[in-house]
Image (cartoon, rainbow, N blue to C red):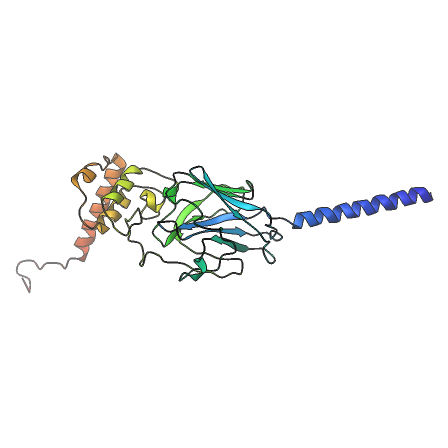
Length: 291
């Protein structure tokens, strides 16, 4: 009996050690971070990638990394230290050197050894966190370059579907410091699809190229009013803000409207006409005072 009791005690001790080890490994994690926001200036000199997690125990990033590949050229950002504390509902920030010194910038938690994070003009950019735990693949044209807006992913689970949109940049670091940089000098002009601060024929071509796109087209693809598609309403935004008239060749390249588009334009015109009529003062009939 004594031998059996000793065996049971040994087995129990081993089980407790195993449970403690598993518990420790479960808490010593890093894999539940999700890419939340990507920002770049037009020349790529100012960039950041922001992460978010709702889970605790995800501070153990060392010795993992982030690999960003632009048209096959990879850049690795090493996480050379763990994050300093509990991670529940926290952010952390990777940014180019000097980002914290820019007006509206915040101190990044990690920076590359030199240079930018990715090529903003690349056809394909892949953000790969910690060896495939969260991957975001986009084209350079999906990321705004107006110095104000950034690409946002509303899905905050590492393995969930991307829910992309564009909006004003909102970098947040692990300490909770939040900011918003403005490199354009002013709020972007509606209809400026390529982010060069001019609304012109080049923006019209961007709209034409993506005419009919649905789902989550970005501003750079011609979605001026953030309504989930690229259609005649976006053309009207461009038209209201265009500077010098576009060339005849650019204007001739506008796609023929579909029946639905014609109905939309007709409805907009009728609405505007009726609105003007309601606002005009009633003219007195002949014989009435003031006639």
